[in-house]
Length: 188
Image 1 (spheres, one colour):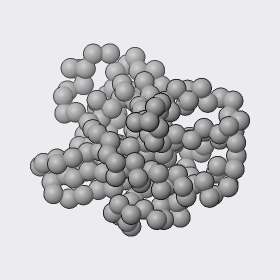
Image 2 (cartoon, one colour; image 1 turned 120 degrees about the vertical axis):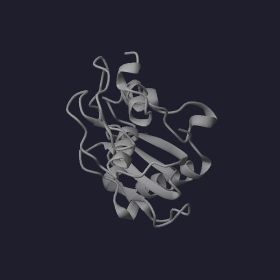
Image 3 (cartoon, rainbow, N blue to C red; image 1 turned 135 degrees about the vertical axis):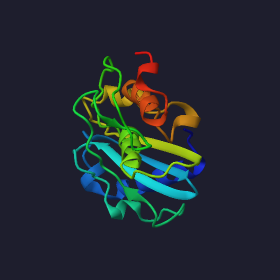
């Protein structure tokens, strides 16, 4: 999976819209993440948005998707239920797998994982994959006291300032969700 300038523009527009919504970013103790995914599978394109943190329900609303110039009107929110442990995860191909038993934070509802499981819930016909790209952004309020784990994943430097890189739990889970290698082939 790769990031793209177009996806960074999408999360940037959503971020601009969120900054205008004082009910979200007006709370200086808030910590949350959002992510976007674009994929072209078997000749058809998909555009997904997911959020994590703040509340279990999606806090990104349709109004926060206004002004997106990259495939406007095509973005769909996903908020799949994630398994309660390492058993029964859905891959992007819609197949059930068990993740490694030793993954710390295996149930963490990160936006990247929600995007991949949400794509899997579509049960697409995977004849060919032209691309699968994701981008994420972290918001950490100035007065957030329990956000050290989020600050860790907030990008550093000019290249990453738009995006967040994956946390340890996502780095451990994502290979299971995007690969068609049997789960017993991954090392914990």
